[in-house]
Amino acid sequence: MDLFMLIFWIVLLVVLLIVEAATVQLVTIWFAIGAAAALIARICGAALWLQWVLFVVVSAVTLAATRPLVRKITKQKTQPTNADRVIGQEAVVVQEIDNLRGLGQVK
Image 1 (cartoon, rainbow, N blue to C red):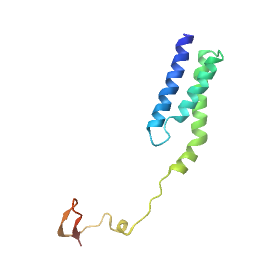
Image 2: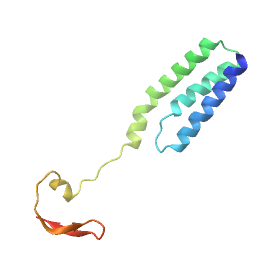
Image 3: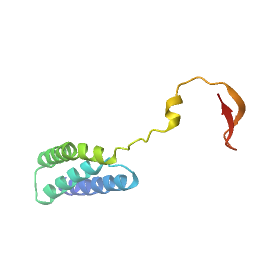
């Protein structure tokens, strides 16, 4: 069981880091940190229940502590344009719309 948990934490950590590297937003970094804490606890000889408690607590604390900051940093600011004022309005097509050639007109 001890070797199994060591391998489990290593595999979980690697998988979470791969998923994090493959995405453009932070989605699993908190759980990877939790898995690293549990792996360190396992290497130090901690009991199985303590490894899981550390995983859950460290993941939750890092998520709660950094998520608002990450949201603020990654929040995309929209730049309003003149076209924004016509969204949802009705119009009459006066020239056929061709998206491929960029032609067409509405009034």
